[in-house]
Length: 415
View 1 (tube, rainbow, N blue to C red):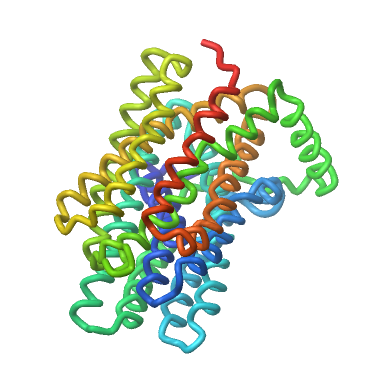
View 2 (tube, rainbow, N blue to C red):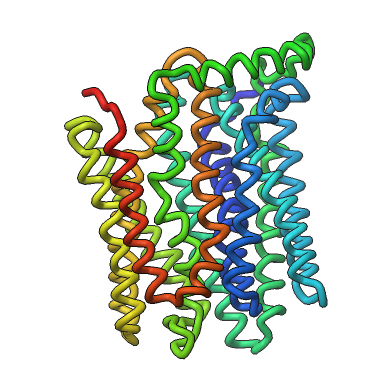
């Protein structure tokens, strides 16, 4: 095997993993709002785009069975590039909403499959020492992809909106840029990704054996101690955030006479994609340090407070409607910092619950429940907001934090 430095492919691989996810989950929200789609439709239809990550464990065994991880990575990157180009091409059309949603579905399934292959390839392409060394690097470049997609690309779209005065054209160009970037990444990985000797298709294993092992693994997950309490925790810990995440961007976009803050697309890119991501990252880092020093049991309740109480900044923003961008930035930073800090407890619980035999497969099932917990509440958040208005909706979010406190109280944590 030709020796390729991990620095040549690990950062770009995880940058490529982050971009399509951000395109599906965040960029789509802002684009549809700027194109005049209602909050109810935006939340409901983009909520369905979570589905590939919910059902990802169902087809992950077959990624091992068919072809190599390297083949899956490069094939999915080509499909993702095609999906992004398809979105760009269909934005100016008459039935853009239906056509772009179809392209986003292709993007979501390709991205979820790419996640499976990339994480498997990471373990095959690196020895144990380098796996530990690069775990922080891969997380960092995933976060850089978030800033690039949620920040820089949104700011580019906003700049084009202002200079051209043509919103569909601005978003079409933005997605063409994203498609070109992704196809360049695909071409780079075609040549630079290593070919580990262990990266082989499991042709000697039949599909029936894979299915038998899969259902056995699934059954043992539900036989774990306190499994149903754990599942309830996975589904409800982020119940408020699942709704807030869908409506925070429409709130920033909508004009003041409709109860929003009336920010421009460029301002949203800076507020959400830069200031917000910095707060989220810092909160996550400090949360990890805190738990590493004193354990999850000691920090679980401060983290529950951190993920819940800062949601109140949106109650303030919806009533005060401040014109100062500094105040808006400060509020978003506080909420995202608290979310990053509080989310640490959630992820560490998932890792702890999945530990034991079949821990990789069990962790994949945990992340499926995590995605489901974001998908279902998020789908109906737009309808609730239109019924209640922004002010009462954000008060409702604070009421929903009781679910976070309630399911945490049911947990049986050990030191």
